[in-house]
Length: 337
Image (cartoon, rainbow, N blue to C red; front, side):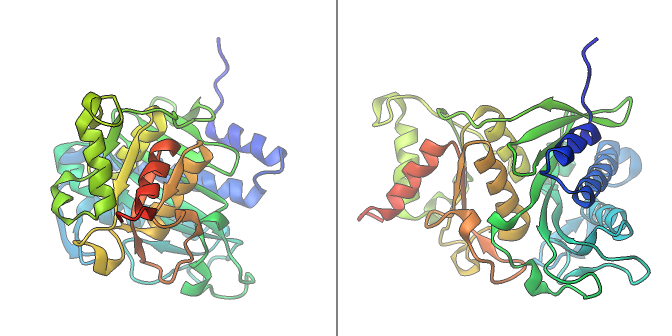
């Protein structure tokens, strides 16, 4: 019988190799525990009365689903008491989420999007949780401020996501490649099923919200036009478009079979700086894709090099197979741009 490596055993191996300190290992185990709980809530759906609107809005002004609120509370409660964190930041909260005074503070900061793609919940499509870990620059007896979270993506110590689909998977990087773990629902363990995931260099798939075509900049129009011309165009092959409308699902497809995911800057989101959140979505996904051999850009610079100015800052996102990302980025630098 083949030996199955669980999530904790994998992290212990990384700890022994000097890549993951003990407290970071324990923090990631707590995040995995929270992901299991969120996945269980998602899977119950209508049976538990968790579908539909919560009747509230988040800091972004977006209507919250009931599961948005539930997932956020699960992550906050699970991570509050362990002593690993100085503070947390959630896409659903306006300001930094403090650690209750009854509990000790730790050496790390945790950022998360508790339920990415929640608009897909009611149609039973994949959704997920995205997270990022930074070092806490404060002493343990000091209260972290928002400015302490504003670190470039390359400062991330760990990043990952859980995807709740036909199976629940946890995808993680601690700076030593990308690894995926599949939840065994019978035992409750995340099993190491996909070691050292690699984004295929060649691809025939792309993901973009084509309803925004009229708002796109010229470089994006040029790139998409190339793909749509198929065999008769300059690329010489037929491309297929895929769009789940949940970043976690679209990026998971890129990691497993290649492709490019785009939410570029356009006239519709220009005033906001982009569509997706730098700290909660773009940075963790960019780190994962780069660790898997792909590339991630805003179209003007590498996502991981962006210096954050605000906790809820938005940026354009272009990530996936390196050749495709570099081609689109080159169009942004061409005279036609």
